[in-house]
Image (cartoon, rainbow, N blue to C red):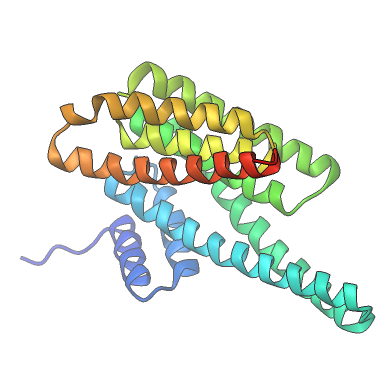
Length: 245
């Protein structure tokens, strides 16, 4: 007997297809639809959601940086017409990026965070909430930037409270949150000392316990630890250069 897919299962399946086809905007749309059926996402589905929006938003962030640099170069050359064209294109990309971020933030605020039953789910959602507020902060100014920075900071801190009280120091979700929280301090708040402190604490705590993990768990955590180490190396080297060493 052939069992038909439910509407929710169909959305999940179409999201999988979209991922394989590298059509991340559509993947995000299907995962957004799947979230509205009221059933909590399992770990695999949470990953689909994360990949969809990370890729869709990531493409715009990359495009925004490229066009912003071109705009600045044209302005420096005194090319007013091309500067105006580049600025218009940049604003178009900003609009798309903001819309995607605001869509996933609404989903997180209204459905995903209130409906999360596990600590790992809550931590991953608060991390995402911090990330998407951070991405908007990167492309805005003045009052809007301040609001987004404050919202990102609160989300990372709320997630950290849960992570530190319920998850082990080697847990990949706790480490991922610590990594992005540190990046936020370094890149957005421009507080490198705090970024290094956060990153180093998470790294050193996890390294002391990593040998107690099973092979699969250790591998997942090791990937995040490598990113933490790479960032710490970059940040400390940059700090030494800035101080004349």
